[in-house]
Length: 73
Image 1 (cartoon, rainbow, N blue to C red):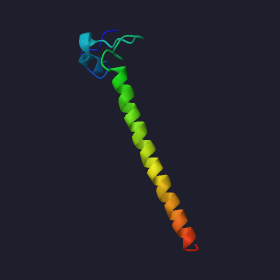
Image 2 (tube, rainbow, N blue to C red):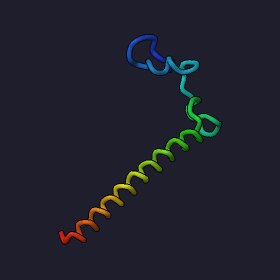
Image 3 (tube, helix red, strand yellow):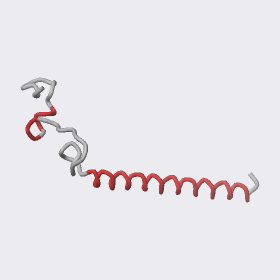
Image 4 (cartoon, rainbow, N blue to C red):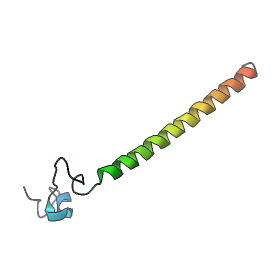
């Protein structure tokens, strides 16, 4: 079904090449726009940053626990 000429229905599809969104397996691009390797790299960066943040929080909590233990709390 082609996108609607006006109104909300189908508005986003008018911005795509040929007013269509091709969905298929294989090929070099996801949805004809995204490089799957780039998506993977960016997702991995996010995961690594979250891991680093959680590691820092765990270390800080451990240090605080040890400090409290030494002070007799």
